[in-house]
Picture (tube, rainbow, N blue to C red):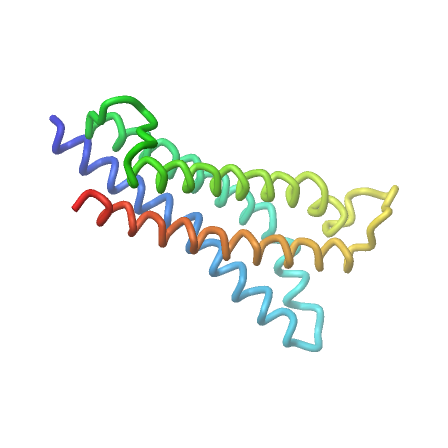
Length: 160
């Protein structure tokens, strides 16, 4: 049973990484292509698909959290946070970075997306200024995600 749970946890973790990390990379490529074009077709495409991207990122982070928690429980480590070990510090750093990424994502979704989609009329931000903030914060999230992925690879070798 333990092997099945570990396999399912790994599969769910890979699916979460595909949605979350791959989605951020795909969003970064789409925004870069939209910036290079003179026409506004790319920006309209991004505006139309932004809610889909946001939902995919949210599902990806939930899958990563659930699979990571499942792996932690299956491995049966003593205590949930074991900070004296290097493994515990790396895990704690990953959790803190996930909290920052999710907080930044909530800020993007709640504050800047309504202005970029022009759903709010009491706009202290123009749609182009909102887009600039979305791109900046999404790129920051991508950078933090890549650090989390590198820390995840480090976790594998911290127990050797």
